[in-house]
Image (cartoon, rainbow, N blue to C red):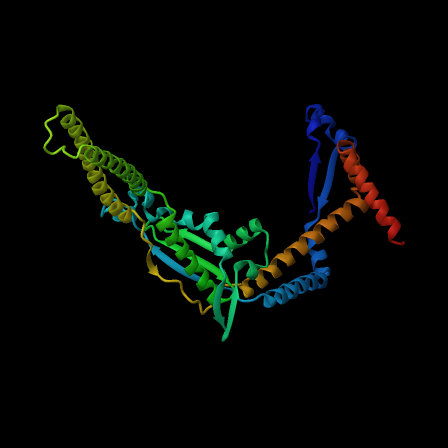
Length: 377
């Protein structure tokens, strides 16, 4: 038995008559009935099996040619051990699930490494670097802009980020860096440059409380050193003016001499204390630098990481087959309602759509007229 699908206008629900006049309303009111005959659709698919097979094989062959023209891709990876844990048991607690690894790190831990590696500062530096490597016994030199063929800075940044993967293990905190190119040696060189840029950022650009304290104390040492030199010069000038100050009994000379001497002693004590604190702050700043502890150095890949040609070809064949069947069914249903017993319902639906969307109806009529005038009957 054919399956009957009835589409009703939702705006007419309140105007439905009583069941005694339902048939009369359905035959004359805005109810659209389209019958789907499943056995007929099955016969249609069997009748068009050659067309479906040609479409599927054609799409599969085109996909296969395209995939085999694509070069192999190779991914170089490196891993970084976590650092900056506040206690010896935080890693164990994160492993058993009591707390996340990020909560057990201080401000200078490796937890910020993925953010730093993915930043525009590091990505732009990596993209501008010229890499020299050996490939098939030939020396090559290129930047990632040359490799990707992109000059626009924003597009280049997005393209470099697309071939780069930076992930962190949520339990152990271990960080993985990977780069995928068609040259194994270039992938390895780019990963090595990422690690070098990370180390450079930690040493010279990353701000920390200890380093800021060291810089502040350095400025204070220079300022107090200048004040001490000025006080010593003033004391020396006073002594040169009063050459007999050592044996003088003048109260004024002794008072002025004591005042300058106390000024020099106070500045000297302050300077000595600041120098000592500055030396300690420099040691703290050195300890405050996050250390990039490599677990695995950038690898030289020997096996391709993509593309997965066989899987993609099989999927393209399956998708093209189902799309072709779907298109055939839709075409058959549209043709059926245009020429079959449901033609009146189809015309009613078209009129309602044209009234609801007048611009779309006019555009469809223009396209239909244009096609009819260009294609001879």
